Length: 253
Image (tube, rainbow, N blue to C red; front, side, top):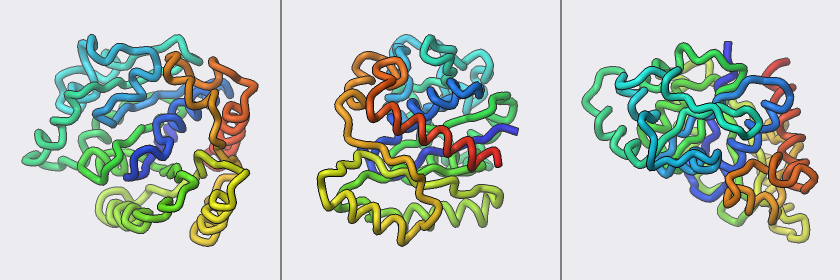
């Protein structure tokens, strides 16, 4: 059975796609087969793995509506052997097209039913809409990136309430794998305060790995690379390597 992990936070700019791609790279390096599912209409995960989202024959949208098969739509990349179920702007119409459908929350779960990978990482959109509900219904684990900033905890209660609703109504097996602090600046007291607040709320669900503010990490997508290919000796790379080790320990124990 795959470890299907929804990387989720309804706030934008917290490092969801960065975390999805770099965690995937280090899971692959650790010998696990990995599929990235780009469930965000912005399709940053797709372009971040050197795929031209404007020239795709089929995308996640087509798989959701049975216009293409999963195995025909997955792209294998040259980056750490990663596989991706790509997206483009067409996905923005998916929520509208799903609305009148029966079991509309389970489209993604059905689409991934035959995915034979050790890990499936779903890069969720920055909203609590139907695409995100689909991701939560399809996943068995949740990873929440939280930015080390003043408003970091704002909205988390709403997110946790949504997760609880999905657990009660659609997916009783979903569990919180952990919360990872991103864009952490050890020079500021604010980052430390945010970390302390997260520990109060989540206890041992906080990953020990902390993702720092790091220039090499920020510039990697512009080169179409994960941090593993761009600069594996950087602080950001070491942080994601550590995170991958923790994810493996928690998921596979």
